[in-house]
Image (cartoon, rainbow, N blue to C red):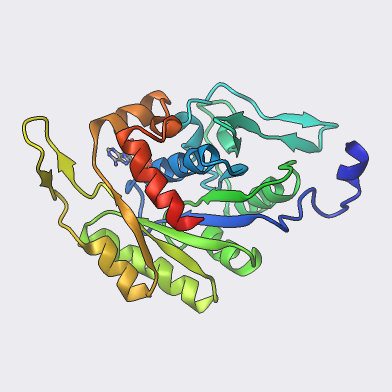
Length: 260
Ligand code: ADP
């Protein structure tokens, strides 16, 4: 096994048969990490081999959402990193390497270096999908992925708010400028269903996710409701998409089917 690994001098992975999906948003707090984590679990339960890189190196939250804060990635010969695995998803996050309360103070080039290590020095094995949870906005990391990871396609997460859509569009424009394919737009926190009626309440407005997809000329992949159980789930590390027949599981499965 090791010989095979060392047989590839520059990187442990070729990603030849892997679809790399980088998931970005215009700004923070729109639920990008929650959506990315649940999408990874969904694709895994749909039968695909899935990896997930928490490319929000400083602001990592994937371990918390997936309930693997205490898990540590291991290393073979201090060089080959073995990712943590949950629900069949192989996960690599700074949060699985450092202590919880450690403040990370690194500049752009160091961050790109770490991301590069996650791509080349982590042994991913065969993957159908590799999801990258990007830091919000159009900073160094999304730009270097667009420029340097040629195979990467982008997914944009936004809320129905006009302000969120406006900043998300800039990510789309950046993708167009770098000839990066955008797979589509997912709208999160689209509507709220209260306990007393079955009506959908469009608290943050409606239709902006779909408008964004039209303006960028890409697919609209679906609406995810604003639900207390989603917030509680990600705070507690309870994964709501472990069951694709649950209400939330079904919504994610529909999105997953549009992506594959
Ligand atoms: P981002 O990655 O865009 O910064 P997060 O995924 O960290 O956003 O989500 C921000 C907060 O919103 C978290 O507390 C998360 O649990 C919550 N959240 C995300 N999506 C939903 C949703 N659909 N319904 C309820 N809460 C949500």
